[in-house]
Length: 172
Image (cartoon, rainbow, N blue to C red; front, side, top):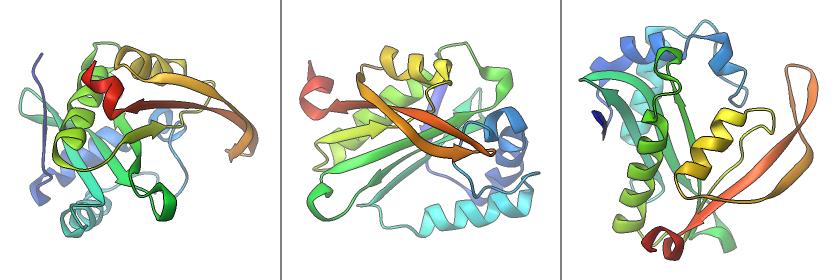
């Protein structure tokens, strides 16, 4: 597989904007992203990721054949959950269904477990996003339950699913 995760570069902003300025992708992400997503939006996001504390934010560009096609991040939680982190990701529609996202999830989790004290990484995809749920399952995450009526997206009350992988599971 030619999927490589790497640190963001400001020069990635144009390709990032091309990947995420897609209503089908944004409909499966949390709110707060501008649509259409511009190169300036990409530069602001990348600047934030480069300035973030590397002990709390593990943010990577997903590249395929040297082109940025998506984003993946693992974000440490706080207080009693300080050794738990949330995973978030997306990939350009042209690359869906090729196993690239599963590989990116495996790489990101492997990096975080190898380079931090994080014990658990979780993700909460929308229940109707079966492709994202499948990515997590193929990457070794375990389904832990449905979070009923957990979000409002595009005016609809929706369920989310909870998936997690632990340092111990990843090692097995």
